[in-house]
Image (cartoon, rainbow, N blue to C red; front, side):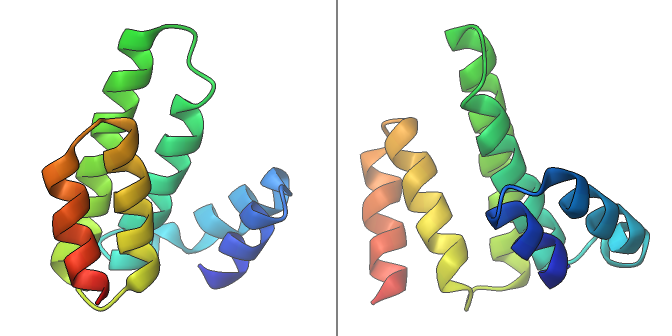
Length: 103
């Protein structure tokens, strides 16, 4: 999964998908899997054609990220993604909650 994340961060999406889906069946219920699905869904939302589609994808992304949080409350990168997404959804209380978890 870490290698797939590296490919994704570099914008090498064919490399990302090859690595991610080769290991996904073994780790589909892991924190990292949910985190990656959440971040991918955020990226999809950035390319949405309508506001409704963008909002739906952002909410789905938050669900994935919250599942990751349930499994790993120590992941600081996860909270950064949740803060970013909460800003997009204008959820000020959630932003405050996640900032507190970072400190």
